[in-house]
Amino acid sequence: MPRRKRKAANGDGSIYRCKDGRWAAAIWVTYPNGNRNRLYYYSRDRTKCVEWLAEKRLQKARGTIESVDDITLLEWLRVWLERYTPNIRVSTRTNYQGYIENYIATDKLATLKLAKVSTNMLQMFAVSLEKAGQPDSKGLSAKTIRNLFSMLHAALKQAVGNGLLLRNPCDFVVLPQVKQTVIQPLNDVEIANLLAATKGERYGIAVLLLLFGGFRIGELLALRHSSLLESDGIWYLRVQQSVNRVTNFGALHGEPKTVLRLGETKSAKSKRDVPLLPQVLTALREHMQCQREAAATSWGMFEADPFLVSNELGGCIDPTSFRNWFKAMCKKAEITRHIRVHDCRHTAATLMLRGGATPHEVALILGHSSSQVTEKFYLHPNISDRAKAISKLENTTSNLWV
Image (cartoon, rainbow, N blue to C red; front, side, top):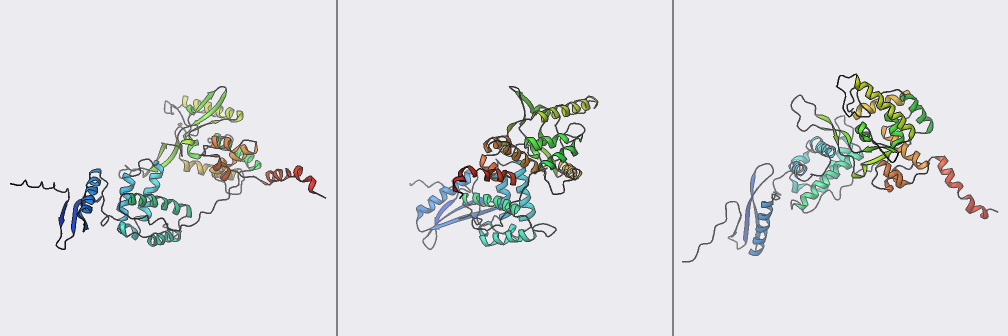
């Protein structure tokens, strides 16, 4: 008696012959939303059906199989953010979640089947964001739109890798051009006025560190007493963390939706040691002594390792609060043009370059990924610098004049 062929396990898929002579392979899959469906593959060649089913079984075992027909764009973006972004920063994850929930989830694209998303639809979405991407009917900035589509491109690239799409519809979307902001570092008069205006202020030490250390605002607000170190007679501040306001994903009803978080720096190169000028070191020591005196009268409520730029009890302060204080100080210093906190970083780079430091040396101090970044974005020669450069032609061109 011939031995009966073993029946495939439930849900393991099957291969059978159709009435029209074709072979068919089928397997059950579970969607990210919990629904189940059966995928089919047809071919005149039974071997191709066997290969297709074997591939789907392997994908199912690995948990990578999805349905092309049922999953929507919004469902896939949520799945992608949860499964395929383990290495992004918390602040980046917060931004991505905002893009998905605030802009894509509220657009008709959200309910569109992933396989139906086209380049033309994404192009129209980009245009709509530029025209009216915010509640007040003002369009989103070109930079924000580009950041959103960068996330979207990464998510759909993963969908291609998972076999959900044949190609990435983001590849040929034309996005608005980002207009490069013209940055004018503070001049000598503005620096002197700002230092005079902030002398004696609670956060006055911050301006010294910004102008002569080139810290990012998040890095500055994360510096503590223990960040001040010494080696071979050189005093420096060690940058290891950054303060950011991020989404409070586990917030309960009535709890704040965002919280301050001490997290990683912008990049690995951002972790660095920044030497201090003697004048800045002296001011910093005086500032730290004032904090120690405040701690002595705080009944034990002061931070054990206080932040250098801190609240009344040595705790961390909000970057927005600091920006508002800085704006008020610029007004007090009678600086009429708009100055951002980040402009102080550009000022520090300009002063170092003007003093003879090389772009490579400045890149190390500022924590740039390369000296090319320093040269491209932080080199701001004024008319005096240009005049010195043009005067160097005199020695090489003197014999050309009649």
